[in-house]
Length: 205
Image (tube, rainbow, N blue to C red; front, top):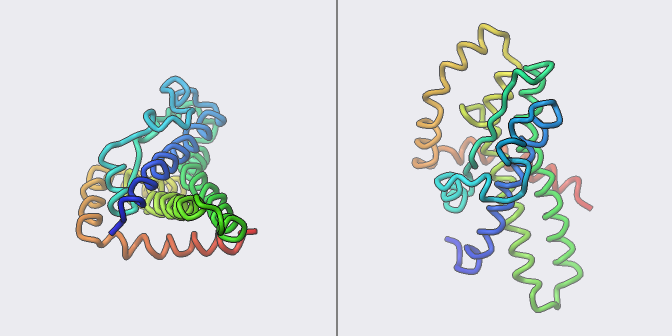
């Protein structure tokens, strides 16, 4: 159960995690030749451009959630499969890099600002930011439609299997809600989260 202080600090941490995730998708798609995210105003860290209310509540309550998806037009890509994989990876990767930065800031705060009056709140904010960014990355790496992991998996499948897999898209959101409500999501997501946290702690300063 989060304290009132943690909830207050979690709000900006969640908004940033969501924004950097969707900006990662939008920026990668734009760099690969698709102007759609720019026209939709998604090349920004403004959280109101990316916010999905239900996904944000899920992130606050369960530490796993989602934002409003960035729409792309794959006809702009020279290599559709490769570009789809790169765009899908860009969101979770942006969160992992952000978590790595916040983790090092958290370590710095603990080592050098221990006697500062605001250090505890700052430390908690960085800690929550690490958790939210990694939670968002881990959740989105699940190979369940419409999450990023499903698009990454689809990009590696041969055409016939890709088509068969695409038929599951309609059932993906229902499966995700069931996993979140029953708590089953944690058994799938926690191993991914643990791998990610091990990566950023290993690569920390």
